[in-house]
Each structure stands twice: as structure tokens, then as C-alpha cells.
Length: 198
Length: 345
Image 1 (tube, rainbow over the protein chains, first blue to last red):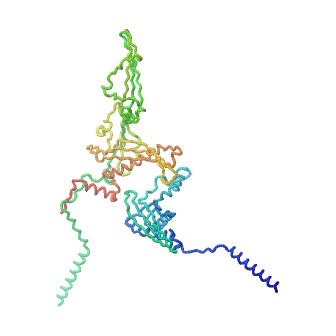
Image 2 (image 1 turned 180 degrees about the vertical axis):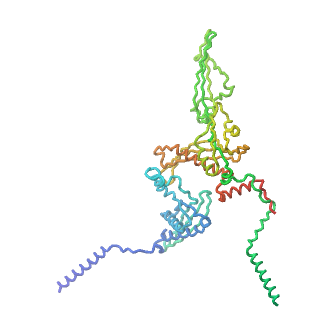
């Protein structure tokens, strides 16, 4: 009888160990989520903020007189969006998203921005100065188009903490500036408030 | 009763005819806008010269080569040593001439300017008789010897002599001739002129040349005087990159006039410029040298384009009749011409 009990215990232990090992080998569970879903993991700047800001700014910009009233699609370039918050925010992602949405509208054209100039000059140098290309097919130096407008702005935040509450207020400003006249042709802002409680 | 019916039918027929007549009439012209203080425009006194008219009238034009006047300055040292022995005088004059840049000379020691170290000589205009009067330096025991029967004097003078060079540039006018041919003119060859010794500004006297018969078959003469030629070589960083751009630019500015050979009237007058530019990325790192021939070609083509714009703006040549440019030129001419003052009522 004792012998029988002992054998049963050994069998159960072996089964339990096998189950644990199998579970360990299967790895983390991965699933796709909705990229547009509201993200509320914490009160920090997140994907929902990025999407909200980009959508609001694009809509407002497309309704501006400088763009909607222009006969030809005006040429715009991206300038800096300054991060004045205490967080690390890649502001380039915001302007890139706005640029993508504006381009999809077909109402504007974009010239390469300062951050993309290295690739542009490298390509022109390669085509014009290497002597390898057929003259009639070369993208010639000196024919780049200047942008009529530039987009620049800033993102700032006010953060307040108590023991149980964290309140974050973001304000995103965007301006459209006429490069020749220096006039501010359009400006708008998007405010976001997020409160996290324990 | 039949009479009444006939009368009725006749009336209906007449009414239909009248209606049909009215319907086929063109719409009545809108009454001219009543503007008090203006009269209908007279035809312009100098009608716009268009390509068709030119073809019909076979107007011809001579285009001279571009005249230039270059001022040169030579720095001159004259050292004279005079040796007198009894009744014999021997004089040794040692002139020395150094060509200098006129601008540099002007801003040199004379003005205490930036080039004073390069030209450490006080300049004197040798054309001025006062400045060239004999100057005898005081006898220096080291430079002269004086005894009872011999005497040595040494004098030194320095100054600048100005010289003017007149001529014609042979390579800038051909694109301009080409555009005039395209616009309908018959371009005739202009006789070239050669500057005489001691030539003055009469070299530019086009009326004298017209009278002398230098352009016998031309209705008009287009002539230009070179105002300035400059070559710049600038290197600038390209923002946002590790590269720089070297820009070599040749710029020419020319003063143009078009003269009617019949009455010597200036029918167009303007200043035009053209530039040829070569841009090289990171050129300074590779000691890039721009091709002067290419720059000259680009500059002359650009100059011709500016000439075309100016001639069109002054209605000497037009864009195609009916085009926006043609209409604009015509409108501007009518608006600007005091003789076409209009009073509408």
C-alpha cells in the first residue's frame, strides 16, 4: 500500500514538472492591438496624444487661408518643434505625422527640411560631381525649389503631483510662417489634460 | 367673316415674322460704361511693333558689340640725376612704371587706406601740371657732391598716370542678335570700331557712327556699354549638413539704348544684367576651379534674356499677339500714354 502511494506521488510530481517546463518553453503571449485605441497606461505623453495633436493641427491648417485660398499647392518645409516639457518627446514624430496627413490631402507640397538636407546634398553631389551620369538625366545643382512657408512650433507642459493624483497639462502650438515676408500666416494650439489617480 | 379670318391670319403671320426677326437679332450691345472725364482712346502714336508688322515692313536692326571703357593706372617713379661739370650738363632719367589696380591705387597711401602698405607711395596725378613741375630735392651730402667745378643734383618724383582703354567685347551680343531674329527683326551686321590713340568718350557717340554710315541698312541700332563685370567666388556652409557650397559667379551689367536711325530718337533704354553661376558642393575641399567659358556662356544667355524682358516691357519686341504679356504691355502703354487720356460720358 505504502509502495503504491509512493509511486503515485512520483507520477504526479513528474506531471507537474512537465507542465511547468512546457509553460516556460511557450514564451510571452503576443497579440496585435488597435493602434488608434486610447492609451491610458500612465499620464505621460503617449500615442493618443500624438494622434490627437496631429489630427487637430492638420484639420486646422488645411482650413487656413494660406492653404485653402492658394491656387497652386504651396510649398512648405518643416522647421523645429521645440520640446519645452520635462519629458523626452520626439517632436519630429509629431511634425512628420502632420506632414504625412497634409501630403495625403494633396493641398500642399513639401520641400526637404533642414534635417533631410544631408541626403539631398549627397545625392546632388553624387549625380553632378562624380562624372558618372549622363548629362541629360542629371538632377542639376541649383534647381531646388524654395519653400514659401515653414511650419514650426513648440510643446510645453505643466505637471502637478500630489500623493494620489498626477495632473499633466500639455499645450502644443504650431505656426505657419511666410518665409519671404516673415509674417505669421496661421497659428493654432491643442491643449490636452491628463489626470492619473492611484 | 372670311375677311375677318383673313385679317386675323395676316396679323398672326406678321406677329410671327416680327417675333422671328427679334429672335435672330444679335443681343443689343451693352451701353459703354459711362465714365465722366475720359474720352475714347486714340490709336497709339507709336504702335506696338509686333512680329507680323516687322515681317511686313522688314524692319532691320544692327546690334553692335558691347562697348567697354577700362580705366588703368600706372604707378610711375621718375628719378633724375643731373650732373653739371663746368658748362656741360648730363642728365640721367630713370623712369619706372608699375601697372596698378585703379581702385587699389585710389585707396592706397593717398587716403591712408587699406592698401597703404601695398602702395607706400603718395600718389600724384601726373596730368596735373602743378604736380609735375620740376622738383629739386635739397642737395644731400650723401646723394650729391658739390665742388667748385662740378655739381650733382638728384630729384625723385612719383605719381600715377591714368590711361583709358576703349574697345568692344566680341562675345556677349550674339544671343541678343538671336533673340531679335526670333522676334521678327532682320539683323544686319554692324561695322566694328577701332579705338584711336588717345581715344575719348566720343567712342560711344552712336549718332556720329550712324551719320558716318556705319549702319546703312538698319532702321534701329541696339548698342550697349559695359557698366561692370565682376567675378565672385564665395563659399558658404549648407545648414543642416557637413557640406559647403562654392559658388563662382560671373556677372555682367550693360547699359543699353535702341536708337532709330532715321531721327536719332531713343526708342528703348534700359540697363540689363546677366550672370553665369557654377555651384560646387564641397568645392573648397577639392580646390575646384570653375570653367570661365561656361560662365561666360551662361552670363551672355542670361543677359540676352534680361534684354528680351526689357525690350518687351518697352514694346520694342512683343510676346505673341494675344498672349497675357502682349495684352499687359499694350494696356500699360495705353494707360501711361498721356495722349490717350480718355473722357467718357
